[in-house]
Every structure is written in structure tokens, then in C-alpha cells.
Amino acid sequence: MPSFFSQDYRAARNRLLSLTQKTGDWVHEPIKHPLCGADGDGMFTDVFWRGPEDASRILVISSGTHGVEGFCGSAVQSQLVAKDMALPDDLAIMLVHGVNPFGFSHLRRVNEGNVDVNRNFIDFEAELPVNEAYRDLNHLLNPVEMPPEKLDALMVEIMRLQSTMDFLTFFKAVSSGQHEFPDGVQFGGREPQWSRKTVEKIWATYLSTAEIVAHIDVHTGLGPSGVGALMMAANPDEPHKAITAKWFGDMMVSPRPTREQDDTFGGYMNLGMERCLTDTWVIPMTLEYGTEAPEVVLRAMIEDNWLCHHGELDSERGRAIKERLLRVFYPDSKIWESQVLHRAEQVFAQALAGLAELSVASKERT
Ligand SMILES: [Zn+2]
Figure 1 (spheres, rainbow, N blue to C red):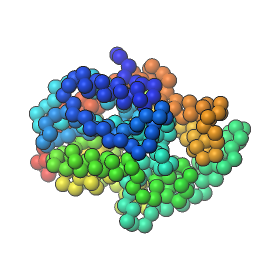
Figure 2 (cartoon, rainbow, N blue to C red):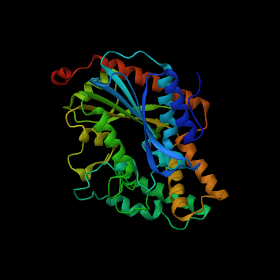
Figure 3 (cartoon, rainbow, N blue to C red):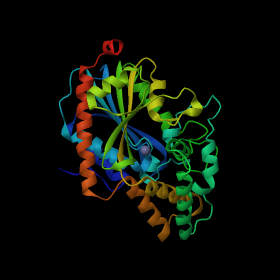
Figure 4 (cartoon, helix red, strand yellow):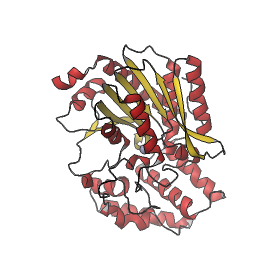
């Protein structure tokens, strides 16, 4: 199996550009980010479209919402293009490459404003959600002073606290967005970010006349290594659950929160698409690949957050921290890469086959 993985943002983007040009039937729109990439050149969120412009059913695959996780998402997008498979009638594929190109290029999970783009799709007209549990952990997750030996002690304390909480409470504290500490981790921002505004424009332009959109946003860093788990937020009475179970077998479906404050998935892009495309049936999914143990991933995120606010990027320690961050979201392992590609091939084929059989009428019947 050829590798579709690239070693930096530029190479990843160029690979996808050249593959789409080679097959010849992809329409491309680059949207330039206001800042430059780590190599000094422009950064883009790129849209690639294949299939009829007025297709009623669209499979959307997005990558790099969490910047540095884009190495994986970009690779599975490239593989899909290279396969050049026949498309069913009345169906199109849209790839969104580099939703957060800053994080992808500069090796951060967050964006240029330290904002977790996947926590930014909240209603900013309403009162900001409060993450009280995060407040108590901020001094551990977001230390100002961090000599190397301090990190071990921080992690011991975080793990001790975790052992006193149930899983969901801890998960919410460290993983759901917080809008109070701009230099903390999981900061969801206080206004819509460039990436959010850009994808909302893309959705409005390309998807608003579609009847059905299945969206798969590709992530890494959660779950057993190399396993690609499909996840979705849906209530039991929604048709998504039964329909996707038919396509993929069982997937992780969490009920939607009844109040915004309870939302462990607060501000996810999946949810943003549903809110944006009010006349379209959106089936919002995340494909999440495991890499390392949760404490290893969290440790790398804490280090990177400290580095960006208080450390020196251009130093031996800075480079070592960046390398560790990269490798918890893109493991340096050919086995991991091939597991990722294999699973993506399966999921995308299942999604296309399922979507080809799906009509809006089946929503009412379910
Ligand atoms: Zn992610």
C-alpha cells in the first residue's frame, strides 16, 4: 500500500493538489489564510469538489480542524483521490483540506489565537458556557513556570485528581471547551474564528441546495492506537443512529445535550454544520483515530501550550516539545499509517454506498 502521509503542511497540500490535478475531475478552490505558514509561504483552506454541481447527496470529508491532526486527515483524503473510484449518480464528494491551516503548518492543535476550532462553533450571541471544572485545573494545565522536572509532578497531580472524579467529569474538565482562559488549553474563543467563518462560507456556497450531507471530520489522539472510531451526537429518536448503524455497524452515538452548559461536545464543527444548513439533512460524524495513551497526549498538549505562551520555540527544548506534539497526533509508525489508511478506505466506501441508497424519504420512514 503506498503511503499518502506527508512530513509537513506544504507537502501534504501539494500532494493533494497534484493528485486531484492528475485525475482531472476535481474542482478546486483555495481560500487564503491571512497569516503565513511555518515556511513563510501562504496557508490555505482548500476545497476540492468532484461530481455534479447540483448533486442532492454529498459526502464531505474535512481535515486539520485540529491543525496538527491534519497529517492523518490529509493522508486519507489523498488516498481517496488516488483511488479515483466511480461515483454513484447524483452524488458528489467535497474535501475540505486544512480547516485550521495555521495549526497544521505551525504544528499546533489550536489556531493562531490559541483557539480550539472544534470548540468555536457555539452561539456567541448567547451567554458563554462556563466550564467550572476546568477552572480548578487551569493552574495545572496552563502553568506559567515549567522547568522540565515540573511536568512530571504536574502530571502526577492531574492523574491524582482524575482518580477522584468519574470519567465524564474529568473528560468535561479537560476536553470540553472553556471560554475563560485565553492562554489555557481547550480555549473555545470569544468570537467566531477565521476557520469557522471560512467553513461556514464554504458550506453556504457548496452545500445549501443539497438534500443530504454526510460529514466526516477526521481527527487523531483519542482511543486505542490505530483504531478509527466513528462518533456522532444524536438523540435516540433521530434517524441517524439506525441509518449509520446500517452503513458502518455500531458507532459511538452520544445523546445531544438538553442545555448548552451540559454540552461535552460544545462548539463542535459537526454541530456548526447542522446549524448552518437548516434545509439540509446533515449526518454529522467524526472519525477519530487513536494514537497514544490519554495522559501522553494531554502531557504533550500542556507542554505545547506552555511553549507557545512562555517558552522559546527556537530552542532545543522548543523543538523537542514540537516533535513530541507532532508524534502524539501523527505517530512515526508505518503500521499506524497503514491501519489508518485501511480503516479510512473502509469507512469512505461504506459511507458512499450508504449515501447512494439514501433519499430524504428514508428519513421520514425511519
Ligand atoms: Zn481532534
